[in-house]
Image (cartoon, rainbow, N blue to C red; front, side, top):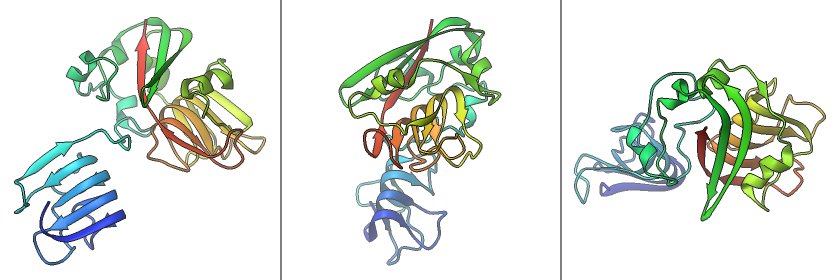
Length: 249
């Protein structure tokens, strides 16, 4: 880190948001102010000099231990957020990460748009717990099911989706819209590229809970895979982030 400023906490950002900032963490500067911080350690980060470094350590301009560009897995990464272009394009991401097994490396392989299948295997890793469920479905590719943004239903049932999370899983009782591109009439609320969304009201207009992959929306838009639940869910409020795995056969 640089030696000055040392602004730490939640939403740590200086007067110029183009520079280092962190949703949770610390920012620092070589000058005796917080106006133009060039270093940070934290979660949900961004800004100069590597805006793609969203979790870890970024340091330039006279830091105390040399220039650093260290990326970490902090489960606040937005690489596969619901609104990410990776769901709708044919660009791969971190090809080497597809060969490392069920770890914390994010990856998208060309198989997303080029491989026909009859089964989808969905896995979530939370701590040391790794669970999978299966969707029996024929398609030309995952791209053909997701990229156009159209809703395509599945019928696994809420209990199957909750099983991915385990005993802590929680959803509101109504709506239960599940499948591909599960989003209600208000996209600010819970949504999932693959998963289930639910509401405490008897409609899908303002869902406040979800379990799925490629998620986003209220109340924690940074939760892109896992379980988010507020407003009278069946097992308490939850903000559970998971590492997701999507496989086809």
